[in-house]
Length: 300
Image (tube, rainbow, N blue to C red; front, side, top):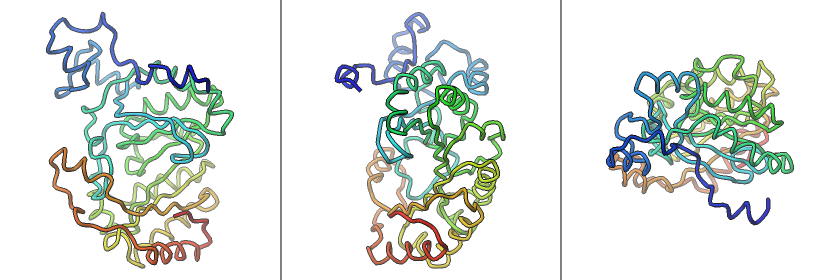
């Protein structure tokens, strides 16, 4: 990438055009500053049209994006954090992504043009585009249409998801996923519900569908002492990983940290892990050995 491109002021997606804005100064303040009230549209659409545009994927609600290396998939990647999530994980690092309405609406063509801008970089580094969140599966039409365009450009695609919204994705949508970073948050329904408020089975179902269609999977498991760390829970996660067979390339053990705590405080949401410590080296080693005993390549 040239220095001029690195220093380009174009660091955000187009969310409005001047002729689409209402004349109200208050409306402009809310939309241009990203302070969306309820489900107001900054692109001049009424509520019915907004819902339709979300359904068709003509717009998507985006929290943020960045360019990174070897974090959210192979090579240099453009990671897009979508707004909206149905789960409420106790250790969530980004509670500011929970509500879709708090994101900024982005046109499909603007997102595709952004991918195209970095196409050469992705192809030279073996990178691509990753959709994360929040939960990117809340906006399946938008994400899948961007992935389809990316595949037509020869750009690698990666979905970072809990798989909880398995039913939202058709087999045709899965066709355009090269890699899935699948968050297996627990190994049994009781612990999964305690950690997330949701159900485990959809994650397993989505992983099986990915494997059946020949997609690669990297399982991610967040290690929280006293919450997800029991030997039984880890064994159950490992058994789930076995279900995915050869589709599973490796397991990432993600040690719990407190980097998300300031966001919980800022949003005035009671934080359940206020005094939680990260895992010791001994605990990391034990969990790593448990997964390795099942024949997995493990990174921690």
